[in-house]
Image (cartoon, rainbow, N blue to C red):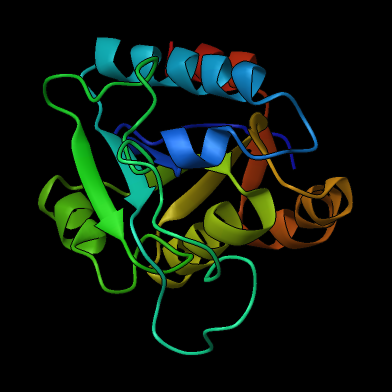
Amino acid sequence: MTATTLDPATALIVVDLQQGIVGLPTAHPTAEVVARAATLADAFRAKGLPVVLVRVTGGAPGRTEGPARSGGAPAADWAEIVPELGPREGDLVVTKQQWGAFYGTDLDLLLRRRGITQVVLAGIATSIGVESTARAAHEHGYHVTLATDAMTDMSAEAHDNSLARIFPRLGESDTTDAIVELLG
């Protein structure tokens, strides 16, 4: 569904655009995703609206096999937000240990204290961190908008599935340019 409006109290949530993730192989060029997310962040900052930069620094407890848990320690800058995004003065940084940005963090509290009623989401990976965060935002009662050209996934099929089958059930989706235009 095309984005039709943004509440006056809308926050941008950018998921996992950090050094260790933007270097992974993805379905769409990460440089373009980062540039579009930076465009959104600049537009939100210019309007005095919150920008939330989410990063992941570990994994949730549970199963330990698989590529995410194998190998040595990550690079020292693995969890650093990409410089194109910041953080800038006034941005909120949320560190998570699981796919979604709500569970186990103070994200909901940070948003509610600011009177936020709607969130716009961008980031990597569409079917993991972005979708998990969008689902939780929906469950927490936020209006959800997804910037579909400011996200990507490691799998084109997973990305397309989220866009076609999941996101229409959670809220509205549109391009970066259309969302910036809605900001006025």
